Amino acid sequence: MYGFEALTFNIHGGYLEAIVRGHRAGLLTAADYNNLCQCETLDDIKMHLSATEYGPYLQNEPSPLHTTTIVEKCTLKLVDEYKHMLCQATEPLSTFLEYITYGHMIDNVVLIVTGTLHERDVQELLEKCHPLGMFDSIATLAVAQNMRELYRLVLVDTPLAPYFSECITSEDLDDMNIEIMRNTLYKAYLEDFYKFCQKLGGATSEIMSDLLAFEADRRAVNITINSIGTELTRDDRRKLYSSFGLLYPYGHEELAVCEDIDQVRSVMEKYPPYQSIFSKLSYGESQMLDKAFYEEEVKRHCLAFEQQFHYGVFFAYMRLREQEIRNLMWISECVAQNQKSRVHDSVVFIF
Image (tube, rainbow, N blue to C red; front, side):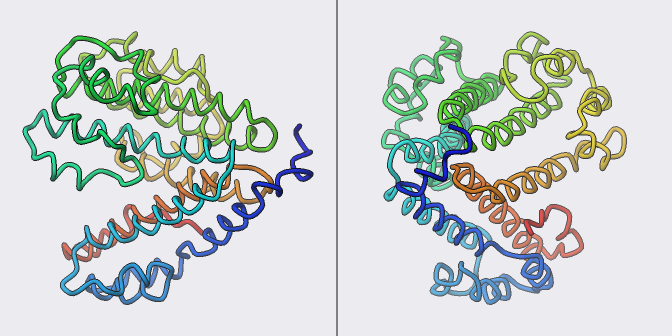
């Protein structure tokens, strides 16, 4: 059906696409970020944000403000917009929107299981969970001692259940196992989301395939770098890579045997889209890699809005808004800790 979306898309999707494009127009601009970077206190940040779409969410907050309050209120705005779109959506868009939250669900599960392992208070952990990834039985995750119990007691009734088939073992939960569980779940989630988008066909399939392939490749690079120097074997590492993306399959074979960051770099430089990312880094440096990937991701998500009649704009908007919240968190932290010289280190401009 590629090319024929214009005939029928607006029957069910036209209103929501207009809504999401309107939301996208409310994202902070470079001028906003320059003003925010000049702020001296968190109250100055609040005053500047009062002229943006975040204004109503922050107006009743008393001084002194905390960074967590700013991030919480900005996230609340994203959640409200998401819930509004989900309420208005019909199939298959409603399923597509639900897929977007599964990544947050995985992060929340890992956060609670890790926190419980280190004997943190469950209530405190629940407050740190991302609101888009909440589900009814999340608080009971704390009782699980191993993967099998985690699945049987809690996750069998959640949308993550199908992704757990690869990680059900009787091994006790420890930091290494939990990290492997996170990456195995993410792999299964991305592959499932990718198949779903392929099934939708048309422009949605084309645009989402590109965005998800980039996400899969970025995860492959991060897994490789983070597992250097650990007891994770090459075969175990290879199992955590998603079975699609620009690096699949030959890039994965090469990444699996990398022993340091420079070997990862030489593998990635064979792929033109990633060559530009690694050219920004000096040899042996991986600290700025996250920012370089975020910048490339933002560029791709902005390009998704250049085409009409597809669902990719919903995914792109959610990711752009999440990046904006990360930017605000970084700026707020730098201002609160009096580290204004570092304020530009992690800010990724969206426009």
